[in-house]
Length: 102
Length: 135
Length: 130
Image (cartoon, rainbow over the protein chains, first blue to last red):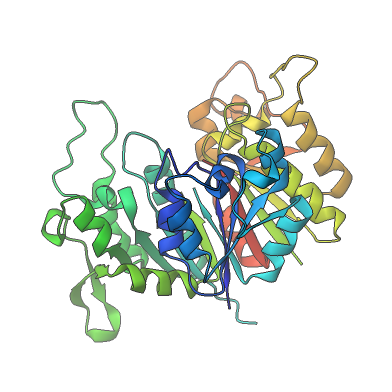
């Protein structure tokens, strides 16, 4: 049993991503969408905290949102996996429930 | 498959500044008629929804905080409040309004609906649900 | 799999209605069912047929109307949220004594019970909001 969490806010604006990571169980997945993708950036003040969580949860970013914001793939943390909308759908069906951190 | 699902309403936003808290409560009240297993979670700024002494006369917005006290009549009596979220905001359980329900399995004894849980317990509660609605 | 979707933030201001649209399209393309989409909070504003975005921008309402028509999606607008925000269908406009209605084709106004029912009847629920 596992959960897909979605986060759509920049972690530099709200605590949502950190709150989400603090409530994840081992084996959960976190998908960063919309402004949430900024949480996937490498070399930021929050990268280390996010990287630590990545040891127990899988972190994904929505490729279309990354591309729209002009973030090259190499600027993302190694631990982060890119998916498209179809990958988003697969994540929803592969996990038992989806929790949107609105 | 059982036709009863476990519903969790996740409240992470403060009241009044936005309408989310009020419209979340409206879903809870309507949802109660569907006889599902319902619980509410209050974490992050959502804990501010439950403070006592709310008085909205000066802002001209309806004070919906008394509605929480009516939830027991709708068989909604699990209001999980995260301890860490309270503490981070300088609040304790004493700052929250008293919300009671009558336990029909225990000779209608009055019991508190608010259950203070740790962050780890909140994560466990979230992981047990069939449906999570976030407002 | 049956997937229920909630759009709970307004069009154009927030990306939620766009992300939800692309998600639903992808889910249908993969052979999943999306029996209903429920519009709540400012998300109800997606349903107005009176919005006129510039020609070179996407028309969010039209996108949804066309997708719903093609795939038989039941698009429900929460009545309580809609009434607050001035979204009315013909019946509701008449009942409230208003001189106009503005609900676009493919959307219907109904109660919050439709949201709970959707959550009960689908295998997954995905919310898009702010």
